[in-house]
Image (cartoon, rainbow, N blue to C red; front, side):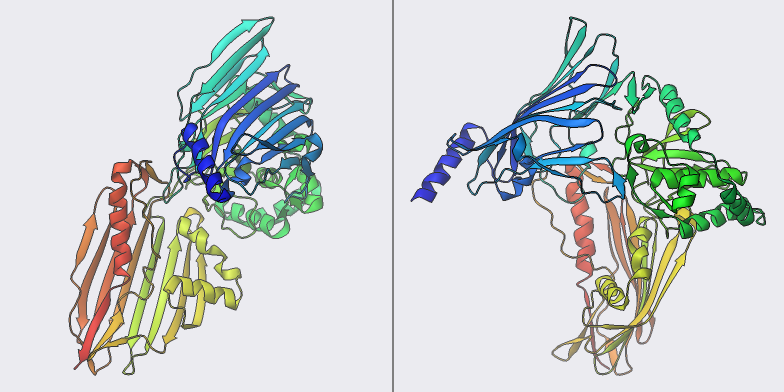
Length: 620
């Protein structure tokens, strides 16, 4: 009886709060963040959070977690866990907060403070308050972003920014239209933003990225200090000069490295070949290791340090390549970019999203965007973390924002060429060639480094033939910058490829060529859908029968086309016992409304259905 009473009590609490569904994981009841800036060196952050946890999946979403860099400290913390009836189950203090300095990089000065609030009874409420202090300077104040997760509702949140009167600050809003309440006095300016609420959004296919969905306000101060280096974000030119000076301080190349550069580049006449030779030298001799200590979070290591250590982070390796190119008489631009966020604010200067560094090499035959941390990617290949993203480009003391080229639907291409030869006993020999370009190249690029078992697993995933064995596997890479492609060729023997139905033999028309799995399309979607990377696929399949068989019926040509994309199948007899099938599918890139969602479903379901088509053959 008690479990029933608990469920009834829980339901009553949710009803009183206006929470009508357990489909979400957490509800932010209130989030109050106060940021007090004393100077470009000192800042205090105070936050009070009340969040309801509705199920086990929401437990981690309600955890307290703060990553502190050098110069930051967690001064105070208090928290408690409250059951559905309002009873305080547990209390927590600063001593209960755990700490770790685990890092995937070689060295950084980050410390993570965390605490998970756990209970076996749902729902429960987590309440906590903390204060953290910065004493050695900061680039930007923390953003106002109370909702960052799917399946999370927010009832109310506020953000107060207190600054000296002479401390200028600008801000930019995303997915919200809120203006601050401003109060001036006692030499300070207090600005308060209030978000009244945000409904829970369920995750799904083709969802917009958080940057296109969740509300956020980010802030850009007129002046800042980063480990005793004063700068300004008032204008793009001011910040560009500050960053450029840091880069140029790390531009001296040691004599030994200079000699190596000339030995590699001087015998080469063509500019692109010089770049390729130096890029190959860097890939072979230097490895990526993350290093984020002090000023090193913004300033790259010098080429001399990288040359001696034979490693560096993205800033260091990009700067190394830049300095080697300059030594060879080739100019390039140092670039900062966010690998997770596509768009950057254009109304303020905001470097807070940047998490990666690359190079841009201007060239008459097409600019090269160069990823310097990979030891294997082809020169100039633009991977998913770069394609279509805004970037800060630095050159000759200036900075401007530029968008890295993206791929079109036709460039994001995967293609299959398959020949199926059916035998008298129902077995089949299949010879296949699959090619991938654009962003699909990146997905298949690791194939060459897999062992035999790993290669078989990938081929089974491609073909949808788990019982087959694969022979004569070949793997070829065409390294041509953004036009790079991969070709995988193999053959397979299927002992029992056909299936009987009376006197008929049924032959799978597409042996995994269009294998996509069962795509779930939840009904009633109200959120727009976004296709960031449109793509195309073609499959050309030839079926050859033994002399004792003939095709009973042939599939008709069929197609569908709408705002989301298109799909078609064409069938052509190429001989007495041979048939050729051409299949193509195109998913268009773009931002679509929820009303367009059924059209996307139509294209994908149509495409999926073709994978189940079988040819009927009978004795001759």
